[in-house]
Length: 320
Image 1 (cartoon, rainbow, N blue to C red):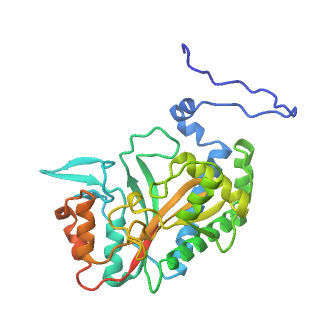
Image 2 (image 1 turned 180 degrees about the horizontal axis):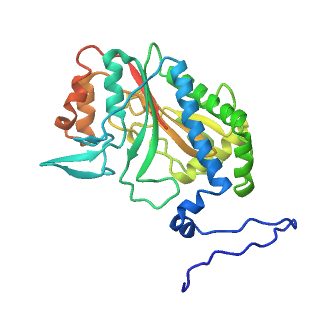
Image 3 (image 1 turned 30 degrees about the horizontal axis):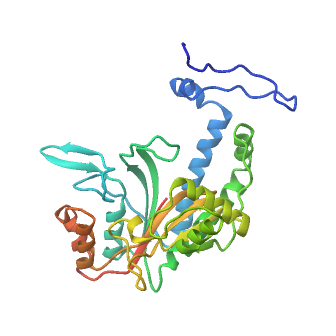
């Protein structure tokens, strides 16, 4: 095998108990059917299934309708260059980066509350544990009656429902996973902690770290902020909202009191962003203006913009 690391044999652990054998990722993936027979992998898939079930349960109980949206589309869903392009017969097409535009159109069609579980495609040329070219997205969208915090409260309760459901229904599987991948129990405040982006930046700066108020957090600062929040508020899970305009997509509603900031938010677990969302722009003229400013060909999303011309709800949602 040359210089490649070899799968190690079983060795006793430091406390004298028998340690599990270490098998490299390449060996596991080259023998995936055998790999999936192990108790740990079975438990992981059980938890994944459980998350989807709990996600659907909570939203259906709160008057959301499950929808299906196209994955072959005419233009980019999110803007930017991280999109897979392909030939659709004699035309150009893209793989959907998000069901974003379609779920908004459903809200405009008087569905008011919708959700989807579907594949998401991102041409992320990044070699990290958190970037994938295809993943399962859990999306929801809803109308707003008075304030975008209505979405934060619904989603905060959704996550608490999932966390509690996993603990109550899948305790055995959690213990199996913990033997191979040790972890600390999740701490989560209820109601879920909300912090403004400005408050997060202030916490980082007071702790001696550099962070511009008008720039998005990088991975390192997200992790650092997660630790600072845990120390101060005793929670692993929190919401950061009111991000700067430069860090959000074209369809994000700008803040009324300062257009350099937005009615947007991210959810974090232990310094890892797991959810992103925002109140959306529902004025068609302003939406077209923001698309142009972000370099998007308006003709490719004209149907989307037109959907707001017949009366539009203030609305927003998340992608998990």
